[in-house]
Length: 145
Figure 1 (cartoon, rainbow, N blue to C red):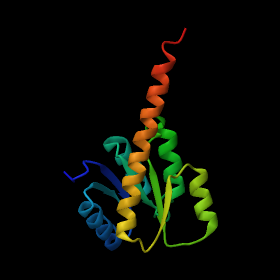
Figure 2 (figure 1 turned 90 degrees about the vertical axis):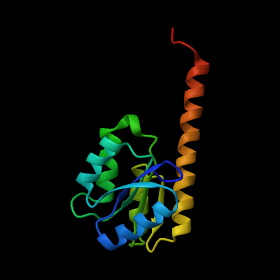
Figure 3 (figure 1 turned 45 degrees about the horizontal axis):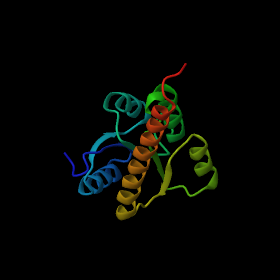
Figure 4 (figure 1 turned 45 degrees about the vertical axis):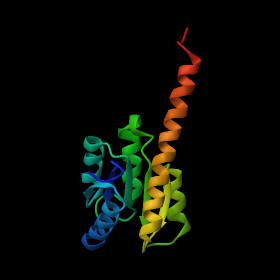
């Protein structure tokens, strides 16, 4: 198990890049489960319930936007799970579409490994803070009448 004990779902169809990213994530203290396409990633998301997702935008079956939309739709109880999108295409439209679908961040390829690890740790910590705040707010309201 990685130092952080946190699980990353890595969704990348290019094998060499997937291997490099996985190596960087493991060095950063994460456990990693990988998928090379959107359909497998949706299945893994539901089974493994990762702490964070790192997904390419361009995938061979579903694109990253469709993948993101599907996991938000199929697993509403996991809405707190951060999703970071990555792409080699530096167009505004791709970024805006990801953000409209509630992506939690965007990284451009080639990805600096130090920025990658810092981004994932930051987003995981922020999601945990939001969950705690929501839980405390519900507890403060007391039982519904």
